[in-house]
Amino acid sequence: MLFDGKERKERERKMREAGRLPPGQALTLKWPVLHYGSVPRFDPQAWDFRVSGLVERPLRLSWEEFNRLPAAEITRDFHCVTRWSRFDNRWRGVPFREILKLVKLQPRAGFVLVRAEQGYTANLLLPDLDRDDVLFATHHDGQPLAPEHGYPLRLIVPHLYAWKSVKWVRGLEFLDHDAPGFWEQNGYHMYGDPWKEQRFDTD
View (cartoon, rainbow, N blue to C red):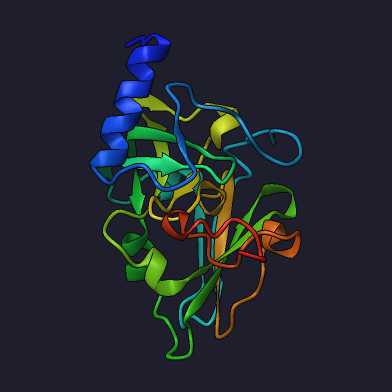
């Protein structure tokens, strides 16, 4: 659906009044493309998903094996640290909790380092992943993810800024401490709550 400027502003106002637009954010009807580095090439024969660290059963899944895991669909808003928000995104993929079922966490595991292509990482607390609306998405709004939006696999953590929803995910490492990822090492906030405007390490 297309909106003119007046209609977009009115929808933005309604979203703010409904408590769905965090402070400092503006509604977008598009889906801007933002990432560091180039879009990686996907080879389904070589691709794998690995879980390591503080787990009793380390995991390695091929692309075919990953796609045999149970899938779910969620509809959630999406907030970028660059101050745009996109509403009512439909995501389909494998819930994080399905991965948890396959690995037995050690008691000390409370933090997660998400690993992606080209050495990219992002840090998250385990409770922020162990939620019913966190998943590894393969589809968005009924279509397979576009390469520039993370195809073949993107982590979706709707309640945090979108840089935590890592593109081109290749695995997880469970830790007993919080280890900064790529953007966190470059001045971004360690947590990233859009409702508290936790954009940078000075916020």
